[in-house]
Image 1 (cartoon, rainbow, N blue to C red):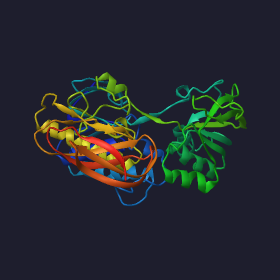
Image 2 (cartoon, rainbow, N blue to C red):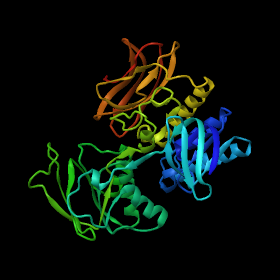
Image 3 (spheres, rainbow, N blue to C red):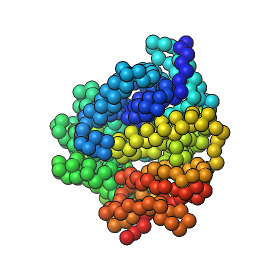
Length: 420
């Protein structure tokens, strides 16, 4: 068994974990990245489309290129003496509240990492057919959008010839275009909500530009076929969530792609006793991105599902700074916290609380709205005073909003959307 002692253990080598490792090294601390895949970069390695890095690099690059730039920076830092250990093909089996990490890989067998702090960067997973209550048999040909992306972009397989997409998440929209370019006929995208689940730019560039119809307030009510998918029944969705009688329509297809949302990977968080937020489905975080367990931090899509990878990287840096500051403070006990309130149209948000210090704190907020709205202002307020604001032409649940505010000591801030 291999024994390893580091200042910071980073679980996950995707964009959040890579950014966290670079920030930890910049602060002069040692860290280890534990990544279950055989290469760094996470899901970005199968994202060959562009649209990444507009905030970080000021240009649009592919997901692979975005990941490689961070990997190159990491290797350059290691060459200059940065204490960054990388363990690939390493599956973390257990995380304790005392920051002991137990993992395994083919080279070392069991690995025990004793860490001063831990940064969770495991990302998220897709909802499956079982979680959207599809009726019918379980035929071959029902897959998630991420699986379709890997089959086509990495493995070189075409999983079908005629596809229906359920859900309008960004991966599903991007795969509608990708499958069309590869010769798969995409009959349409069916979304149970009355608004798209993905970014407006993806609706335009991936559906409108290719003549692929988007059916809002629609559902797939049944799948047909025993061994191989033969078709689906689609229908308008009623207010009670059931199909509207008389709107059912049979669509022959051999591929049903599910793009019905993402869920943070919570298993290790639960093992360590981390409190989870029922709205974000990720850990409850404070303004240093520390969880409810002292010394355990979270970043990227394990904390809240972001829309832009640039925000994922930023959250990794925020968690790394928090982890290093916590170590510099000689591991204090659990600090007192104040609640971050959300008002009106604001839904999922991080942080959910801030540390109750005795100085003004610069706090970076991320949030999503519950419903689309136009001509609004995103505000951070406290005790009737506006601490920060930003006017927005339009907001939608698919788009993450961000705001930085200086929060006075001893007050609970509120994040709100106000019509202007």
